[in-house]
Length: 153
Image (cartoon, rainbow, N blue to C red; front, top):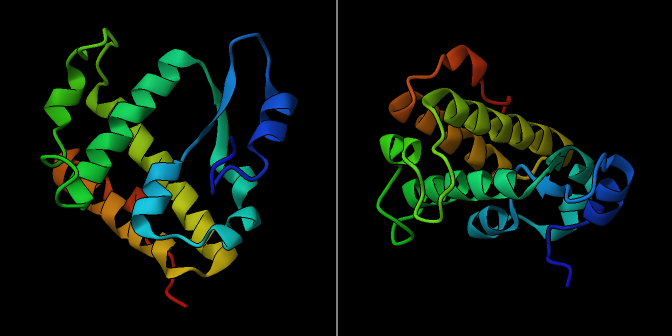
């Protein structure tokens, strides 16, 4: 069953799959875009840049990071961003994410949100950039030069 923000995902997976077991993944996932209230009608304008290939380990790692981001940004959906907690092995046995891996993941999501804002002009993607920038600075000691916000329209 296709979700609101899956435009072109199947085709991307078919075109880029290099081995059996690999599938297309979102940088900005369905849950995140729904939480922000992004317009699904604008999604196809940048959907091709929102996918990458991964396996089940990638899926688990990305889901853990997404859950931390959502927990930080939206009250009632978690206890905030716990960078140290993400470095620990998960209950399901997934290895932890180093601080650099977390920063890389937040950075990739930031870059995708920036491309989405520039393609659609939808303010929700600017909000995503701001929140990801805050997480990178406050929790991951990121270099803020890598997190320059889009020019507001």
